[in-house]
Image (cartoon, rainbow, N blue to C red; front, side, top):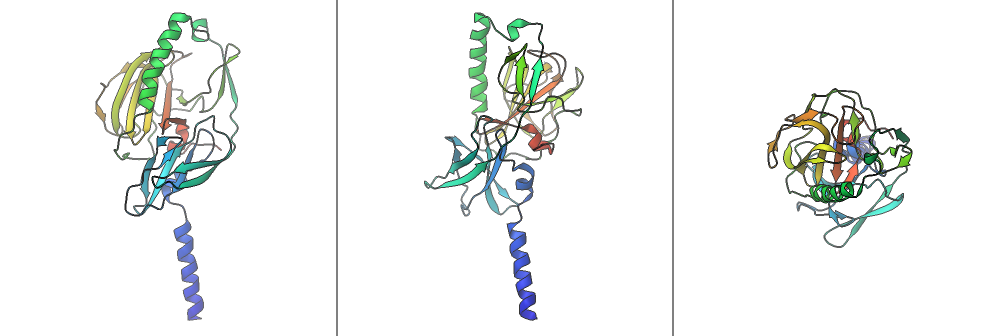
Amino acid sequence: MRLLFSLCLLLCSAALQAEPGFISRLLNQPVPGGIAVIPLDEGSQTPAPRYEGNPVLVVKEQGKEWIAIVGIPLKSKLGEHRLSLADGRTLAFTVENKHYREQHIKLKNKRQVNPNPDDLARIQRELAEQTQAYQSFSPIQPSNLMFDKPVQGPLSSPFGLRRFFNGEERNPHSGLDFAVGAGTPVKAPAAGKVILIGNYFFNGNTVFIDHGQGLISMFCHLSKVDVKRGQSLPRGGILGRVGSTGRATGPHLHWNVSLNDSRVDPAIFIGAFKP
C-alpha cells in the first residue's frame, strides 16, 4: 500500500511539472500571426535563441525554466519551423492553421488607395523609419507580458483581416482596432521607452514603444501625441489621444504588437485571442 501511495505521489508530481506555466498558457498560440512558446534547456546561463535570423525574447517561466517567446509572421507557411540556439542546435515547433476573414472598406480619398509618385516616395521613407524601430532589440526584460488594454472600449477590426480598399486588396490588417471616441487617452500596456514618433501617410500620428527584447508596440491615428522620443513610460502612462489621422474612416485606435520583427496579434496579450 505504501509503495502504491508513493507511486501515486510520483505520478502526480510529474504531471504538475509537465503542466505548462502561466506565460505558456497565456501566450502560446502557434499560428501565422501568433506566438510560439518554446521551453529551453540552457541551465543558469541566459540563452540567446534566434528565429529567421532575429533575436528572440526569453524569460524564466515561474522563475525556473527558460522559455523562448517567438513571434510568427502572418505569411508563415504551416508545418515545422525551427528555433536556432547559440550552440548550433535547433528546436522544432509546429505552426498550425488559422482562418482570417475579409474586410471591405470604402475610402473617399483615392490617393490613400493608389498613392501618387510623391506619396510613394514619402511612404518608402516612412517605411524605412518604422522598419528600423521594429527591429530594435534592447536587453531590458519586459515589465509584464499580460498587457493592459491601451484604451477601454470595444474591439472593432481584428488582427489579420484580408483588407480590400475600394475593391483592391492591400496588406492584411497588422494590428487590433478599438472603437473609441476622439480624444480618449491612450495608455502604455506595459512599461517601455518611446523610440519613434512620426506623422505618417497611412498611420497618421504614431508612437512606437520598446517594451524590451524585441517586444514593440505601435499606436496609430492619434489626434495628439503626449510623449517625446527617448522618454520612459510606466505601465499605464498616457502616450497620446485617439484620433483619425492618416488612412482612417473615423476615430479609433490601431495598436500593433511586434516580436522579433514579426507583427503578431495583440489580442493574445490581453486574453482576447480567438482561434
